Image 1 (cartoon, rainbow, N blue to C red):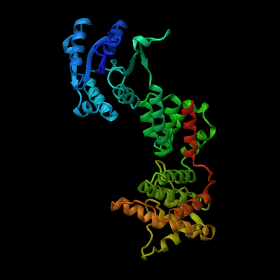
Image 2 (tube, rainbow, N blue to C red):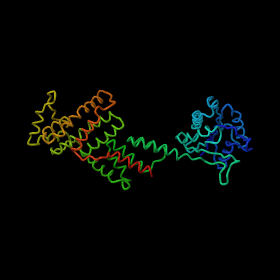
Image 3 (cartoon, rainbow, N blue to C red):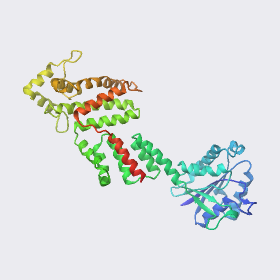
Image 4 (cartoon, helix red, strand yellow):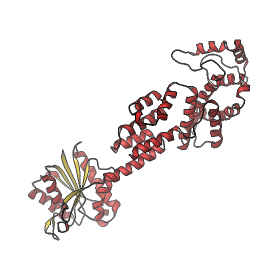
Length: 421
């Protein structure tokens, strides 16, 4: 582990005529050496008015503290800062350029030692600003007190800790990402800020997997911490993992709401198609004693054989005679798609008369989805947004009870609770 020192050069370096003592750069280097720190490099940033003092500081470091000339780099700042040394943005940019020169020399365990006691006030502040903003990996900001003004109990050289301020910045970003249901982004930010713990990490990974419909993975990350969570989160997973069509329709509905909130309209339309398919399966389950889902042990041919036996073959006769809007016959083999399920629904029409207008209302949006996917047509808004949401909710209420709160908002509240701790 070594130290790389970065500092602006001030008018009291390397020696202060005011206090008749060494300036802050020399004092900080002495302090670090006294703490048994190995000095790997010293980068000094100077303006046109402090150029000579930078050269003097280098000579002092070599002669008095025995640092090698090759370890010390003198960098002149941009002329704009020399002409306006009280402009904060210029000072921050100069500090960033110093950082860019330091990073290639920094090993994983090395510290960037930032001297916040030399230069103009804005130059001194630049280091803390960059550290708080996350630009300074593995860094420490140091203050050197005026030796004439040290009070009893105060240290001459001490570290300024802005980590809490940085954490607050990072936490605010994470909270916004969670509010936007961006669980993966929140996890990346939290990990980079070293603010994650096992519970927050599990909850964010749970949210990411659940939004991707990977319910087994979502359950597995919750399992180790489920004793610390509200029971609803665990219960929902059991229902979704079973592949129940009503539960999947509800999940599509609530994930679609998160997409709509974030104006991710293309993804919203894709979820409408998935919602339609799951809702139709669930509706038909109330009348049709045939599981319309395919699987490793259940192919399409087996499903069609069961359909042929329904109602002594009358349902199959109806489907074979069924005509689509353009007069085409229904395909009565292969995958049981939404067109087939809609036809079966019509066979049981009296039982589903109330929901048919809402299913019909979705067709225009499903068509938009098909155009968007197959023709690469963009979508920047949803027409009659309130109307399509009403259709979705009325269909969903027909197959399952609809909670007043989006389960992802409930998850967000749980994440916020853990973050607050």
